[in-house]
Amino acid sequence: MADAERIYEMMKKSIETYDSDAAVAAAELAIAEGLDLLTAVEKGFANPIRELGEAFDRMEVFLPELTLGADAMKAGVAVLEKALNAKGGKLKSKGTVIVGTVEGDIHDIGKSVVATLLQANGYQVHDLGVDIPAPRIIEAAESHNADVIALSALLSTTMLYQRDVIELLKNKGLRDKYFILVGGAPVTQAWADEIGADGFAHDAFEAVLLLDSVKEGWGK
Image 1 (cartoon, rainbow, N blue to C red):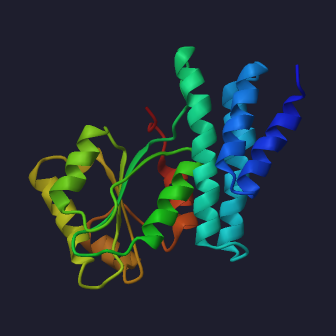
Image 2 (cartoon, rainbow, N blue to C red):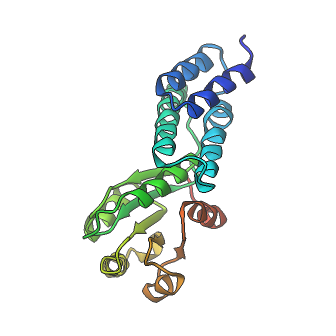
């Protein structure tokens, strides 16, 4: 059997070099050599992408590199997940998160970073994109059996739509089903408190730390 640590190192290098093809090759080798696939996901892909995220937070790498590294991770993990499913196994998720920029707002970068880092830290993430009306956000949360709804707003005029999502949840009798996380440049803890959100994060790392601190009982 090939040395497991060598394969993990191949996986790590694929993240560091933003090489999706190399990530797939390393994942296929892990399967061929009979490695524990859950361990391979954690040691080979999750740890390196977290390190890349920390480098991004220190401004040592930038968004294109973070995105390419995340793409490589997704490609490799998809191969391992397919093999796990074939064996009747399953990747453990910390919880399911719906992420979107609210109606009227087309800013994407901050929301995308949050989605990337949440996925890298073990959450199942469904990124709806930008300019998403409240009914569509709730429909996605219901259809994916989500634990968290994360709402981004980068304009003071559109942050009002974060409140609309919460109000519509209340009207539908669904408010207590979800942890509502809000963020974005104009958003503050005071605004989160005012609209009845469950949490507020200044940035992607704070979002991960907050959800990790409250996630007990989540995960599908």
